[in-house]
Amino acid sequence: MSEAAPRTPAAAPDAAVARPLPALAWVLLAAAGTFALTMGARQSMGLFLGAINSHTGLGLASISLAFAFGQLCWGLTQPVAGMVADRVGPGRVLVCGVLLVAAGTALIPHMHSTPGLILAIGVLAAGGAGMAGPSVLMSATTRLVPAERRGFATGVVNAGGSFGQFVFAPLAQAVTAAAGWMAAVHTLAVLSLLALPAAWVLRGQGVQQASSGAAPRQSTRQAVAQALADPSYRLLAAGFFVCGFHVAFLATHLPGVVAACQLPPEVGAWALAVLGLFNIVGSLGIGWAIGYRQGRWPMKRLLSLIYATRALAVLLFVLAPKTQTVMLVFAAVMGLTFLSTVPPTAGLVARFFGPAHMGTLFGLVMVTHQIGGFLGAWLGGKAFELSGSYQWMWWADAALAVAAALLHLPIREHPPAPAAAATAQPA
Image 1 (cartoon, rainbow, N blue to C red):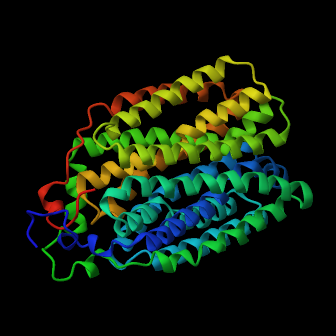
Image 2: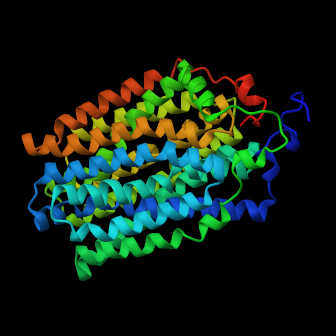
Image 3: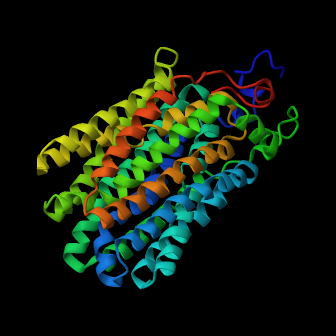
């Protein structure tokens, strides 16, 4: 079919896999469930920071370095995993990722050196979570749902990660209280294996397989070159760097912030749980906004609003008395903005370039996110070790959030370029 009717299902390789509602529900359940299990395990690791420190005696900065490498590896894995999934389908990529998450998590209590923790936390668990992370899951979902539902679908998948954090953090704290932190870590490792059946649901076809007989499509190298030449794509990636800094700092050090404020350890677990719970609301809300109010609420303005809200919330938290109520309210507000940046960021990548190379191009944006995450996780530990406080990290977080809010304003929400539109249905 010609380019004159790009929204007709036969016009695009990914449109051929649009499915009736029951199949769509299974796709969303599989993708959101996978993200819940892998993200829930990763985002609960901050609860064990003090226990790992006591167990190994390595010091907070060394352990934070392992968590920081995890942030970086999670990001660096995603464009590679996305590229493989774009070519051969996501099923095998997801299986490998889930197995690595389970293996790396289970090894954590058995590591007594910084290199060992970097291997378990920073390479195996984080690399596996990257293979079964947003790049592959968003790409698979984008291909398997109709174009008009992609915004809401990415919100649902993103909410899955938050639901995992909401469930896993108090569960890990409860198992720790009952049987110790090692038993809790091993429990998280076993639970992550529940994501394996989702790989079959999301297996799909690689774009190169699905597009046989269709119009010639861009190579991966051409698509990457086109994306990097686009100023709007570069601004989007720069803003996502700030998101990574913010998310990794909170996920890794929020229990430490609670302890520094001399609040009970249970408050740290519930703060992480509240963060996840309200991120479900934020993710679904932002998915609805970009899916059903598209055009009226431009995605770049939604992103600016999210980052501005973060900056204001951090400033108010710094100035407020550190009570249990303040901590939980702060976690709730942060939860609304925590990962709600992901659906509009993924939506803009799909709008710019179409879904044909979505795994690769969104994976590259995730790299910048995780470079920020590396700095957020590592510098949080260094700051506390040098000053005994997280204060300057809060000021840096607020300043970066203001910068990100401003960076998104010049973005042009243009449709896919002709080279991408010829072979991919617009988002």
